[in-house]
Amino acid sequence: MKDELKYIGQKIIKNKEILANNVRELQKSLLPIDSIKSQRNESSSKLIELLGQSLIDHQEVSKDIIKWANEEASSLVDNTSLTTALRSLAYYRTVIWDVFTEELEQQQFAAITMLDVSKIIDPLLDEISAEYGMVFQEHSNKLMKVAYTALEELSVPVVPINKNVAVVPLIGEIDTHRSQLILEVTMEECSKLKLEYLILDVTGVPVIDTMVADNLFKVIYALRLLGVHTIITGIRPEIAQTIISIGVDFKGITTFADLPTALASIDLKVVQTN
Image 1: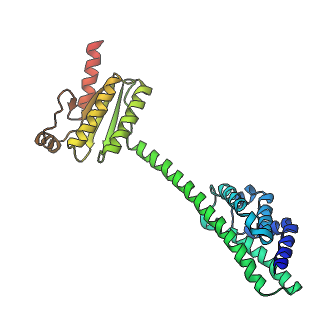
Image 2 (image 1 turned 45 degrees about the vertical axis):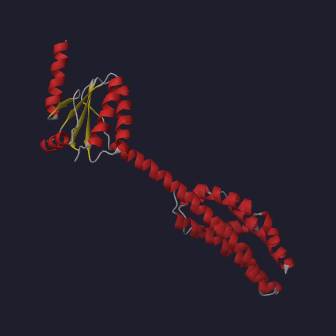
């Protein structure tokens, strides 16, 4: 039986280029043209060779199989779905079994040889599938992280009014994580734009409680160290009542009812300075 497996393995290795071409022909109906072009023929023939070698000595190829799977998945991940990649992988099984079936008929191998081939080849292809899944998942996580970061940055838009003044219209709840993001973005933008005034407009913030106020104070004090005067606008009457009832002290912080009033105040200060 070992001799039969060895014979089939050697036959696969000897014809690896032909078998690789057969695989790629089958893949053309499934994979995008760009993916087919990005795959080298040596890559397909390498896997064919490893699968053939596994029938001769399957203990020696596992690490090489994982390495191949990682490199191949990395070449597919940008323009191919995981489902399509796994379906294209199945064609290697098809081509190997075509060879095996032909030899089984011509050489009259024992029927159990078919089971032995399956026991060796299938787990290796399963390892490749698992590695594909890991590579695609890591790529997906990376894309999601980039998208989430971009979305977070959009939630803290710094809108320049002129060379010295910018407005940050805040909308939605401000938790500890978002307040840290506000701090990082405003400090970076104020430094880059060389701002003298930054207006935090909280018209769209539904609740200002002790935690939110404390987070805003941290932003204001940090910007003060950069020489930026921070103004808060848009505190609605019901929010003002809440602030008073919970004892939050806005002493020392400049506030205005709305954005136009704040801008008018800044213009007046500029005129008085000049």
